[in-house]
Image 1 (cartoon, helix red, strand yellow):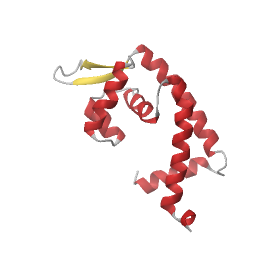
Image 2 (cartoon, one colour):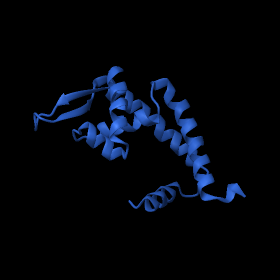
Image 3 (cartoon, one colour):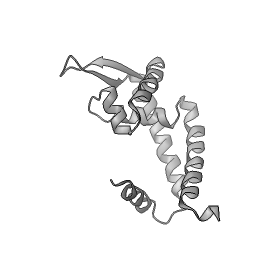
Length: 134
């Protein structure tokens, strides 16, 4: 049966999680990809656009569009690095910080509820990281 196949199971669980995230994040004007970018930018260390792409494991050509969209909404800014004037970094604006903090709380609660049926959600996450080689 298709439902016994790992690929089928992973694909459909991801589809459910993605739909739930989209609904939960919509009031914040974000989707899952937007929130991932904000999370990388909020990591504490100033990152260039290419470093954000590498951290998220996304194609460097698509990260520009994602950051452009967040910048147009006033959530991030590109600035000249204070350590290296030849380098630009992406930083959260004040509105970006508020939006990220609020949306991140929503994401965390959604994930807790989504994983609630599992006996050990921490172990599940650890097992997934193991499969990713992390």
